Image 1 (cartoon, rainbow, N blue to C red):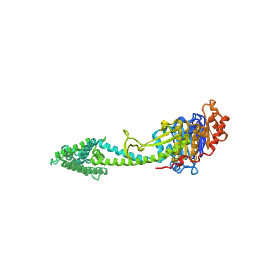
Image 2 (image 1 turned 45 degrees about the vertical axis):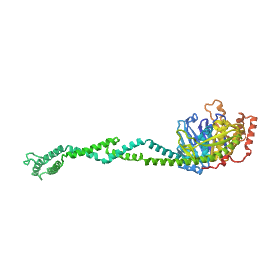
Image 3 (image 1 turned 135 degrees about the horizontal axis):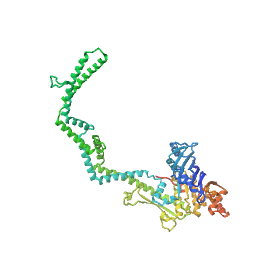
Image 4 (image 1 turned 90 degrees about the horizontal axis):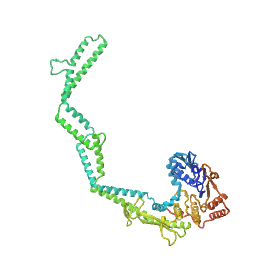
Amino acid sequence: MLDELRIRGLGVIDDAVLPLGPGLTVVTGETGAGKTMVVTGLLLLFGGRADSARVRTGRDQASVEGRIRDAPPEVADRVRAAGGELDDGDELVLRRVVTSAGRSRAHVGGAAAPIAVLGDLADHLLAVHGQSDQLRLVRPAAQRAALDRYAGIDLADFADRYARWRTACADLADRVGRSAELRRESDLLAHGIAEIEAAEPGEDELPELTRLAGRLASADALRAAARSAHDALLGDPADPMGDTRDVSQLLGSAARTLSQSAGTDTELDDLARRLTEIAVLSGDLGAEFGAYADRIDADPARLEEIEGRRALLNGLVRKYCDEPEPSVAGVLRWADAARQRLAEIDVSDDAIAALRATAASAAAEVADAAASIGEARRKAADEFSAAVTAELSGLAMPDAVLRVDVAARPPAAGLPALTIAGTESGVTADGADEVQFLLQPHPGAPELPIGRGASGGELSRVMLAVEVCLAGTDPVPTMVFDEVDAGVGGRAAVEVGRRLARLARQRQVLVVTHLAQVAAFADRHVVVDKPSSAADGAAVTASDVRLVAGDEQLAELARMLAGSDSPTAREHAGELLAAASAPDASTEPVAAGRVRRRR
């Protein structure tokens, strides 16, 4: 349970420690004193949205720190996963800081952690109910969710089945509705694949063909250049008389001249050797030029063949390569993608029949699951109706009857429909049922949806009765009620307090209230009030938080009843405390304790 809450720099609260404990803790105070800041602090501590406007004027930051005793195993595991540790094995410290600049930080078990971790822990530790829950309760979706919580129905599996069915239906509709378009696409893809496969292009073929085509187109010029180089190096075979001096002759003449001085000077001998090497290289190079000239041949037929192949490959690149750098490799990648797409858009009768079978199978699964959920809801609806009606009787609505109506959702435009239990019903991800809370406030009154047939005070009591009945299905150990008694007074307010006190027997309950009838049932009474300086024109109002008991509690209840601590108000407050401390007429636990979760 939440053992202690410390709030600093939040709204009108400068620095306050809120002592908590088991049972029922009530928080009271004058309007504007800062009671709501307690709930705001709790919401921040457990991952709520940070608002820099809540930071107290003159402060750089607001902080909320909570100490949780006897942390459950799943909480301890999540804390350790986030890098934190528990004190003394089972005590957890959480901290949230919000700066005036809007930045937010969280610490879990002494370690910095993402804000989302606080939200994860809240799922296991805390449930907050406020006046806005009354408004939500009039919505059909909230009523369906409440019944599902009571019945223990988890819709995750059904939602998955529903998603698979809708996907299968969409695939079938797309395939059938676009069959002509898809057939045209299929024909184009098949034609392109066949054209590419018939050409059998090589990934690096086009550059090689370009090189060969250039060589064949310039064969005569290349041969003449090579022959000229040969003749310059080794002489022209067509000139047997050697009238033309070639490189080999010149080098040979130079070598003969140098040989006459061989051995006279080492430097000259070195140069002569290099000349000999040049002569050898010149002869080899001349022979290679001659071989090249003999080998190259102008082959118009071969050139035409290569040019045709190049034209074919370039045509494929222009048609099928949509990459920034056109290439045959891009054509081959297009063909691979086209084959994959062709397999996906199979519009044959067999393919469409397979899609129909898949959609029908998915529809059958959804229909069976929706029927099971509907049956569970109808069975739980009777028990839930009786439990809430019993709670309303104890909340000064003795003749009121609440009935939870579960009916097949009628088909509607844009809503998929299935035949479920012999009735055509509209189906959504939450099933095929419409759930509605109908209230008959007294005999003879019409049975109307609670959004139309309940006053504000009645709606508050219906919401509280529902929450009491759902308490057994909620695993969290701490429940917070923020002024859920709005619009309630008199004997009804006493019964609200009694129900909250009963609920506090099973878990920790924190209630922010403005009713003395509710506050009288407190095991622990916390008052948030402004010091007298606030009324004397202080620049920044600051609220104090104090724990009251005995005479101080009596004085606070008197103030809540009459606005002043008068003898008459004290007498009335004493009567409330006496009535609250007397044994209950019924010592049974709240209805939540009798609820058995079901699937």
